[in-house]
Structure formats: structure tokens, C-alpha cells
Length: 174
Image 1 (tube, one colour):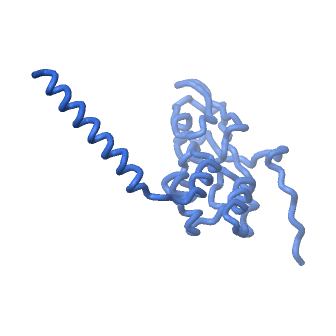
Image 2 (cartoon, rainbow, N blue to C red):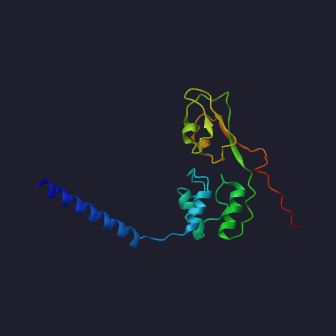
Image 3 (spheres, helix red, strand yellow):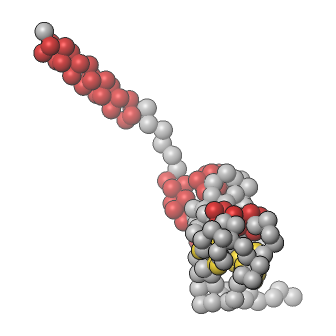
């Protein structure tokens, strides 16, 4: 008797599994592969500076044409030009924004951990009730830590020009 119940449950499970496998293939919704490529290119911090909830939604909006390729401030102008070439569109003229990075006035930092918890890129290091500091090579300038700091010891400063951030200046049009 117990063998019959086990056999019935096995056949029921196999039937439902086969039905789900068929449904996943027959009812699959095709998406635009450019969305996946764009999402992989974006920083992935879900900072929301572009006006969308996350990087996936921003990629979908860029493919649909609702957002410009230069909408991601943490990505900078290099990311904007890569996105524009992938989408086959021209960049608008305001991509020459100056890259910013977070700076902590370490003399006034009490180690409240608010900036540390707000940083989606793990660019801030420190311990509770200890001084915090920013790893400038990792900071994308998303400003989430600046909003979280209640003590006013965190500010955004212009990033020093480096080999990977330098852009050839465009000629002035007279």
C-alpha cells in the first residue's frame, strides 16, 4: 500500500515538473538583449541619480529612449560614450561634468557608520565609533553617503585628473 502512494506522488511530481518545464519554454517573454548588456555596463549601485529605481530600470529606459546615455553620474563620460555607441545614438552636449568623489573630514568624524552603510560601492572603510575614510579609486561620486552624513563632515570634492578619467578637450566652436 505504501509503495502505491509513493508511486502516485512520484508520478504527480514528475507530471507537474514536466508541465512547468513546457510552460517556461512556451510562455517565455522575449526581451531586448541590449538591456542586459547595458545593465552589465552600469555601476550597479542602485543609487537612483538617473531618476530610476535601479540600474536595470535605467537600462530599460535607455533602450526605450526615455533616458539619455549620459544619465548616470557615477559612470561618467566614459560610460556615457560606451552606452551611446552601443545604442547607436549621439551624446548630448552636457557630458563634460566634473567627476566628484567623497571626502571625509577625519578630524570631525565620530564614526557614526551612516555613510559606511549608505555607500553601495563599499568605498568607505571604518568601524563603529572610529574614524572613516574614502577609498578614492572605488568611489563613484553617487552622493548617497553625503546625504546620510548628519554631522556635516562628509563633502564631495572634484576628483583629481588621472589617466583613466582624463578626456581630450573638444575644440571650441566659434
